[in-house]
Amino acid sequence: MAFFSGLMTRHFCKTMLLAFCWLVAVRASYVLQSGVWPDTSAMIASDLAGAFILAVLLTVTTGVFRAILVIVLGCAAFVAGMHLTVHGTLFQLSLIGKSVDPTFVTGSLINVHSLWLPIYIFLAWLLHRLHRSIKPETPLAGHSGQVVLAVLVTVVYGISFQSLTTPANNLVASFFSQIPGALIAPVSTKLLTVTESATTPKETLEGASFFRHQVATPNVEEPPNVLLIMVEGLSGGYFPSLSDYHELDPTVELANLETNLRRHGFRIYRNALSMDRQTNRGTFAILCGEYPDFRRQSRKMVDVAEDRAEVDCMPGRLKEHGYHTAYWQAAPLDYMQKGEFMPKAGFIDVTGAGIFNGPEDEVEGWGPPDPVYFDNIAQRLRQLDSQTSPWLVTLLNVGTHHPFNIGEKREEQEEREKQDSDGKLDAEDITPEPQEARRMAMKTMEESLNRFLNGLASDGILDDTLVIVTSDESGGFIRKDHESIPLNSNVGVLALRPPDRDSLERYADRDQIVAQIDIPPTILDVTGFSKKAGDMIGRSLLVRQQGNPRNLLLADTYTGLKYFLRESGQLLSCSELMTNCSSWRFEPERLFGTLEQTDAEPFLTFEERTALFNRAARMKPAETP
Image 1 (cartoon, helix red, strand yellow):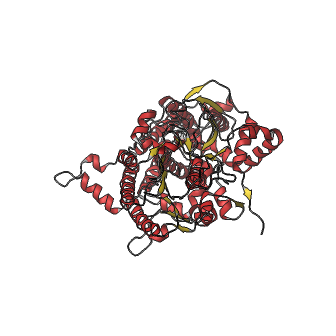
Image 2 (cartoon, helix red, strand yellow; image 1 turned 120 degrees about the horizontal axis):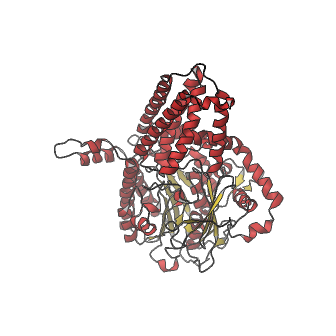
Image 3 (cartoon, rainbow, N blue to C red; image 1 turned 90 degrees about the horizontal axis):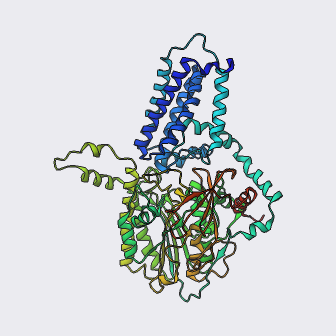
């Protein structure tokens, strides 16, 4: 027992109590900052584990090591709070590398939200000072036992949860438990690939319908124009009718956008799935009809951009048949190497934030606010529509991306609306509510997109145009009762308006399960070029399910969860390495509102699970010139 004597001292007990109180204070600041309240019992249990680990760190560090602990703790608390506010999860340690990208730093880190950093640094320093005020016994002993038990707590914590980044997780315990995974991530994919080739028969993969391709191949005499609108971070859960249908409680409601879409003849699908988090993953699935890269570091778009792999994407198909293909986004093209990828995907006209960098439209952060972006796009679309050739235009805004830039004019308007009759601001107006920045950005997007669609309709541009509104990712679907419910970050959005000469009666029912990979085959079907769809997967919306359910692979990069979904009503939720899984069931017509955990055994073996995701990661190597 002498080995663990340090655990029994009054000094260590006081230190652990101090650490727990500090973590509770940080947790309270997260709730105020993000509006996300985790499950209370799980939160207390995880904070107790974190308090023990933090107490050991405070006990064994002095001098320069204590200074490093204060800085790291303050920075980690800041990043965790911002990530929870923006994405609904704590940060993934293995993704920290993207924070050194200049575009990401200027776009997401250097803004008004960075004022939280000195606050968390101060809280970490205050913890240090309060701990110094606790008088230790003489001599202070038992450090070895404390460290050993802290490591043991970390290991047990790490293997007890499918995900280490859901809101109920503890900042300290989650950080240290993620270290082994972050270190082995570069070799884990190779190990799983060996497992697949050695133990999984090929027919097992072919028998599963995870890679099914379904098109209707109709005859089309006059191919329509195509307008594909990707709204950054938009979730179908923000539409009131969908959130009511699934009994969700979102932080944002876009009633006006939903009403306007229906007024213009859109069908809004109520069970739309986003494949994964991050723009490059969703964009790849939407354009190329393939699964995105579900690994921690997404490589598919980069490998194409750097000529290591080839793709056969939907824009390239339309380009071959005389379409003018354009990709117009608001953010800089060099981020995620979209400037190199998009031409290889088949786009002729590719523009980013640089086109807005004129004498009056100086670009700051990620790019122009949505009012500027959509007004500019409307002018360019009118010019393009005056030409004789059909066109495909793909859009991606940036105003609904953190830090949620709504533009100076919109900010001034908001300030005027908040002022009372005496020209003063109330106390409630001065202190913003949690998620208020997101809410205002979504409202600004709603107004801009409504004005954009109304203008196109008035000009007759929508008459002979297939219009699809979707999102690059669902933004984590931040809701008031947010917790680690499966598919919480996959509540996507898909709204479709056929050209006037077409009819929605031909398209899939609004309650059919649809996904981002269904968009390319749908566009090729409607334009009449789906007979040779190559290696694309997905089901065209012109194909009705009719008792032939498929299987789908999905993931959530920020929680590390991977999903296997059977449209018949089964879901398998697994940890990143597929070792820890839970089974769920749901009603196919109400996917997000009926998820219920069961005691059923996983319907796929470990070898089958790893093999399926490894197959999804494969790409056609580029031919050597």
